[in-house]
Length: 231
Image: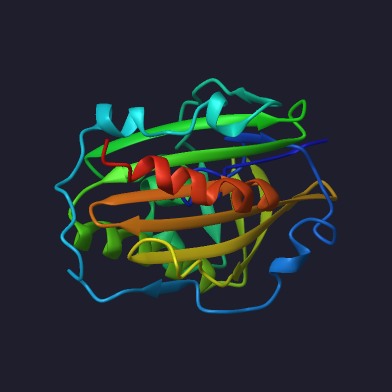
């Protein structure tokens, strides 16, 4: 049995991404030191460009040539919002909508790509958003704070309960203007899946990488460099 969990856009529900089950004790072990999930640099220290269109963001997503051999694009998944509830985390439950069902965040400009690696043994999802720096900062911080503020909670999607454990991770403070990172463990049917989510805001652009911890770490720098390239 696979634990089907969302790794998109800070999403947390079952049945959005087919991640294979893995042991929480062997995946992402080096990330177990608690730390602040968010760091930031002084606002307006560097003049940043205005927000980007969805078409512009699409061109800045990683593709197979950027990732290397062994990666295959995954088809777009329709967000599933019906019959989903969060138990044991009032702050997250109150957010509702996309934040609690794994859909894309409600910023006006967005682009997304999913990839499977090694015969679907691992997956990685990249999302790009653009809006004012303040709106991006406030929106992502609110969701991250809600998720990591509840060490354990449960998501029930379509009648299927999924236990979730969340943990703040050290954020990559040398990237962008603000950074957030967390580790999520999804458990159902006696199996578990570990997902790392790292978000970096650079001016009016927000990058979110989610998926297997090793893949997120491997491609974060490359993803941000392409997303923020000026030419």
